[in-house]
Image 1 (spheres, rainbow, N blue to C red):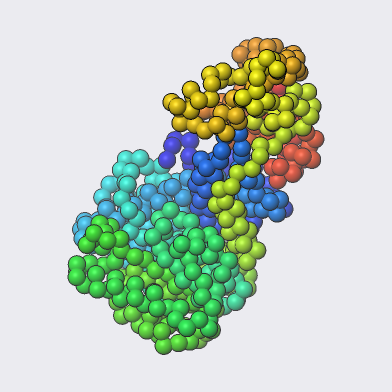
Image 2: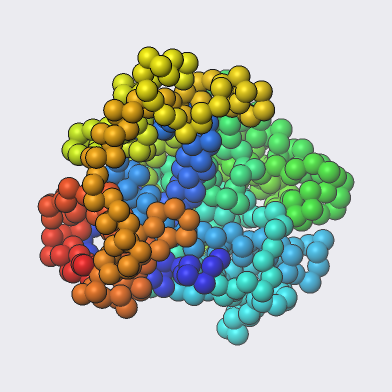
Length: 528
């Protein structure tokens, strides 16, 4: 984690403002963990899209109805990303920090504090530096969220850690489902379903959960598109929805017996040369079958040795396993852990929006580069600055018939013989530009040289969007205030630069989800 990255709970300089109307509430508060995971997944897919696009073309933009989802990820997810990285690093360190490598600490829960990650273990242990013990509880240890002293590349041994809610001190709590084994969600059925849907979404995108297989039986079908390779939905009437989970649990029990370890210990070193599976099953409480009874018996009789957790959603009495109650006021109560939290949850619409956004980012078909209006020099070029197709000539055009120029004047055959390119790419990147068009383009921006001189002089606000981001406020701006919120003001400057015709305050308010008064304050700090 870089020195500029601080946990979201430490980023108190974000102005306290009313939630934007487009904000997905399920991705706020403790839901920031999910927002950060979704943002990382989105960026990974976008990188693949850009790698796959052909020269001179661009990736598909998401449809308008998904803009609120993406804006939420960019705001909440960006702010929570340092927290996600801190948790991931803490989990990797924890498995290697115990006194006995063969028996790594059994993790129960994690609390995300303003500048520390606190882990709650099943039994008192001694952890190595840089962990710091909590004097009041031998099962509780703390790690500075900004610690660089022992960054670990080890595999996480706790793949089913998920965030469950926010306490009254604004600390996010996460619990280790695999350690808990069987969990029954009772209480308000709507909040219970939202809670389960949220758990499924985190399993899909948490960086430490990449090896978890998830079966959703009669619950959370919206989560499947988040990662179809690992998440499956079964209807309640399906004949054998639990067979795979039962087989996986049995195989893990056998491997634990062969190596005389817990599933956590086997996973740390992938004992036996194979990846140790982790399996989560979300089950609608209406399901009653001998297969379910068998799975619950395996998980209950072989604690910490199945690699499997079962979450019963809207379960009925008697409660099976650990009882978790969702109230009608949106709180989650876990008495055995002493937790009373504002519950995490995703509505069906929120989950569907997140899944659709990631699904859209999985599409590798590129599209034409858009144009950016017909004002001045823009009538000659597309949004990337390339001269429009209708104004250029094929590369095999006879020079005598049409005077023209190109940035790659050598014959195509000569270039294709030695370069990793195609004829189509050459036409796209180095077309023949008629001399008349070239002269018109140059004449359309007579002030270019003056603009470049003003850029070099540094007397006006300017922004570098390639390479390391650099932003300069104007002589009447407030650079010390801007420096405290570099990311926000960089985004604001970029927004202004990318709208050279100017914007009205309503456009700024809509783009940033703030109010007019607050945005005028922000604009005053970067004014020229």
